[in-house]
Amino acid sequence: MASGTADAAAGVGSRPAPADGLARLARAVLSLGPLLGVLPPVTVPAGRRAGTVGPLLAAVTRRLGSPAVAVGAGPGQPDTFARVVADHLDLARLPFTEDGRVEGADRLADTVDEAAAADFGRFCTRLDTRTPDGVPLRVYTAGRPGERAVALAPAPGMPARLAERWIRELARTHYVVTWESRGLFADPEEPAPPGYGVSAQAGDLLAALDRAGAARAHVAGLCGGAVPAVAAAALHPDRITSLSLWHGDFDLGPDTPKTDHQRNLQALLSMACADPALAATIHETLCRSIGDNVPADLAHLVLYPYATVELFRRYSELNTAVMGEDLRPRLAGLGQPVLVVTSADDDTAHPEGSARVAAALPGAVSLVRPHGDHISVFRGEPELFDALAEFLTEHPV
Image (cartoon, rainbow, N blue to C red; front, side):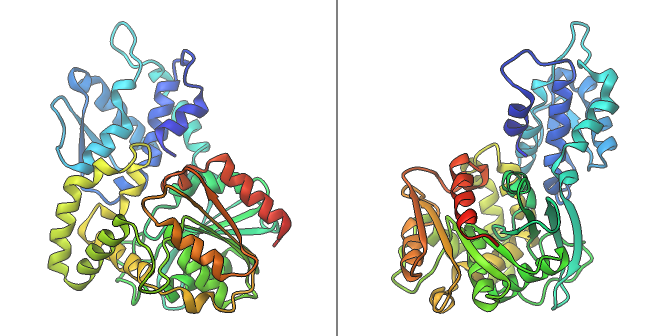
């Protein structure tokens, strides 16, 4: 996933084997795939070693089938996304021999192939489908079909890789199903979806289960994905056997507490939906500052829906629907077991929203951690997996 995750797996702290630096670079290129696929050509700096690093990076991207990244001797492009790409590649960390060669370059093909074999893209099976309203959907599965199914309802607009730790962990014991949001991951030639509402997003969940061959599933809703997860459970109690809602972005009427982040983002996204010209202006303004407010290890994934004006406009439609959905009618009569998780210091999605959802569901299990910022959900901390494992043991699919 992020370079820090990959390095931890490779054993940072001991002296690296000659190919480790190159393996890290290959993993970084792979995890940048979604972002590089929608950006215009990117140039990153490598200083005086540009002449050596440029051909090496070209060979890595070519072998992986990834979009090319140019390497220059100057400071590189000043925009946010080029900086995110440069930071994630971190070319300065490549190990060099005394005569100026990159260590392990003689084993480039084997090293890159090994990185690709262990990558998220090989760990998961991609199953493309179309929703009932004709929207193309990328569905991903992991684990063994026939095991108990867990569907991960993603944060709207985010690449599936953002939930990689969840997918890898859950696939050890379950059949995992997830998908990427309508309209943000389709072929550029595809027309825009006819709608982005919560019911449509809930329908995407069912379409993903159908394509994966899962008759019933537990659904884990991450961040904004908690809202279509609840909607799907309310509409299809025969398919959704239980729910877990992780740091959900909930609206429960006009007196619902919201963080400053929620209020400000909802206002901006609503304006972007209302006026395409204004959407371009808001996008330009956000792109000048947004990179400073996102953790570096996940920036290349979290910033994906901001990469172009059109992606941002569609992202605005998805999330305006989620953030403006009064969830109270959906909660009424919801009979499945539910786990609701948040933290006391989440300043992105107000923890009181999760508290009110739990209170509205008799028998819901509520877990409020003392600490854990919003983005920590996607890092898949062991405490979160332990809570879900305990819940799934008590409420098997």
